[in-house]
Each structure stands twice: as structure tokens, then as C-alpha cells.
Length: 397
Image 1 (cartoon, rainbow, N blue to C red):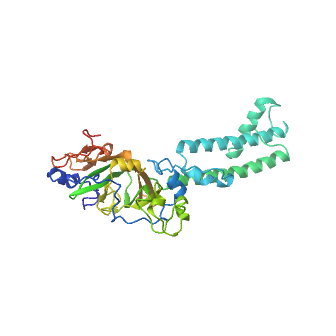
Image 2 (spheres, rainbow, N blue to C red):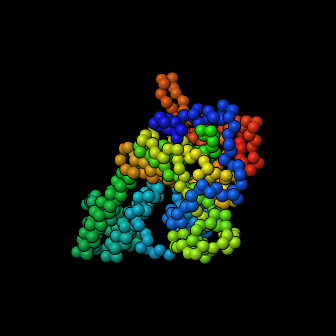
Image 3 (cartoon, rainbow, N blue to C red):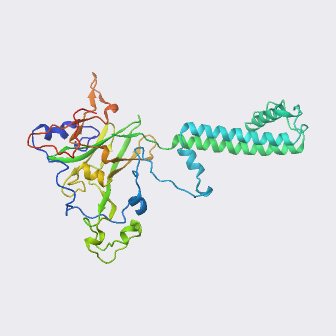
């Protein structure tokens, strides 16, 4: 599904590229200098910082969101109370999960084997007197007790040994129940594999230009009620983009802690930069079905924060596009969330996505997921000369 076409779930690159192929001069997304702010762009709410906080927003030298949706934030000195064992076991990878389960299983049996060894050779029948051989015999007896196997060759002979067997049987019962519950929760937990294009493009769109990126479902299960939210974040000079009631002192505090004060002159804020967040209006922010792909489109108009931006200004302002997708997994009926971001270096000017749809001999629609990030240059007409600070391509990537 593309944000251009009105059909459900299909990508229609012909509609998206018709303006460029007709020879109509296309306005570039990078025209006037960014030093002249557009008066049509509404100032953002200073409290609308997406929960990142002013310290993170203004001081981070990294991207907020990695391409896999993880955040570049590390928590320190939170202690053992900050450990959520259940959450960790649900979200950790399958390989690490089985390793942790195996280590826990062997550790519990080794602990009970040590207790049996301390009780002495008379605690269990037919046990070696000492050494590694005795410990291994106690260990395998613990395994049989823990799993309620009970081969009968070795059995407890003293009251102390029977008490330890009782405790181990209880621990084994709880352990198996917990491991089974966590394993079931991992299988039943909604998961996704929403694939984002590696680049976003500034492409011709309805006589103008638009920011576009493409997504598709990497699982064989279906997603429904897919919605997209895109936020543009970059640094702004307070002298060029003043906020009424914001002085130079409050500009240094976290955004969530700022409160309006007396107005200051632009000279007092010269050189001070704050990060602001602008939600981008999308041509289509929601699709009902998602069987193929979706090209998310933000038209770049005079009211867009991307108006008058160039690749150079976006890089200088440390711009980042934050993307959040929400959908319902049709199989589990659970909600899934996918996140990603695009930096200025991942934007391609004057380009469009190549078609990824085809039909087989039986007329069935096919989607080539391997071509999700393939783009091609938009033909530049003689009346529109490319700017030197724009990024063009001559070969499909």
C-alpha cells in the first residue's frame, strides 16, 4: 500500500512518478536558506518532547532511535530492584533464553547434590564414599528427583535426606511450572518483523515534493489496522526561532521543567540551540490492511518543518525522523509496535522507490522484499538545475 494510491494494501509507483515523467518542473525540497525560518510553521509545544527529556534531547550526541527500534539510553545505579526477571526472560533472544534455563537447571541440581554430599555417605544408598564420583552420583540422583524420574537404584536412607528430597521435589514442581509458563508466554507474546527501508527519499509528489519511506511485513502472518506516526526532531537557534516567554536561563533546563518567563531580546539567545520536535502530517496515517507494502508520505508544503531544508542544514542541525508504527497481529489479536528512525545521511534527494510488485504466470501478486530499499534517480528537467548541497544518485541502490 502506498500513501499515494487509494487502494488497500498495494503499491502504485506509477502514480507517484507521473509528475516527474511528464516533464513538469519539480520544486526541490532544498531551496531557500534555512536561516530564514518560515512563519507558517507553528512552534512546538515545549513539553511535547516524546518523553526523552531536555537533557537527552539537547545533550545526546547519538541518534535517539536505532534502526532496530532500541533507544540509546543506559540506566546506571538502579540496583537489584531494577531487574525485571520476567520481562528479561520474555524479551531475551531464544538462544540466550535456553542458555539461561539450562544454567538455572544445572545450578539447582548442583546445589542439591552438594547438600546430599554434605549429609555423608550413609544418607543415600549405594553411594561412593568420597571424591568426584560421589558428587556425580549425588548430582544424577538430584536430576532424577527434580524431574520425578525415580529410577529406584539410589534412594534416601535418613530423615535428613528425605527432607532434602521433599524440598527438592517442591522446588522442581515450581521450577517446571514457571519454566513452562514463561515458555508459553514467549510463544503467545505478539511479535513482529516490520521491515523499514534503509533510506528515506525526497521524491516528486502531486506537483511538489514529499518525504517518503517504505515498510512491509516480514512475517507470513497478517497485520491489520496499521497506523504511522512520524516526528521530525532537530536543533534550532533560539535567536532565529524565538519562543515567546522563554529566556536564556530556562533554555538550559530540561524541556519538561521550562516555564514561561519574561520575554528576552534575540541577542540574549544568540548561539543558543535547543532541540524541538514537530509531528509530521502524513498523506495517509492509517491503513486497514497490510498484505503488501506501504509507502508513508509526508507532503513538504510551506507549513511543513522540512520546508526550505537542505541536506546540509539537516546534517548541521542533527535532524532525525522518529517513526512509530502500531498494528494488530491478525493471528494473536495482540498489539504490536515497531520503531525506527532516519538521520540526514539516510535521506536521498531527488529519488523515488523502485517498484517491488510483480505478477506470476497465474496472475498472483508478488512482493520482492529484497527490493524494499531500492531507489532510482528522478530525471531532472533542464529548467530545474540540481543544487550542489543536494544529494543525487545516478545508479539504483
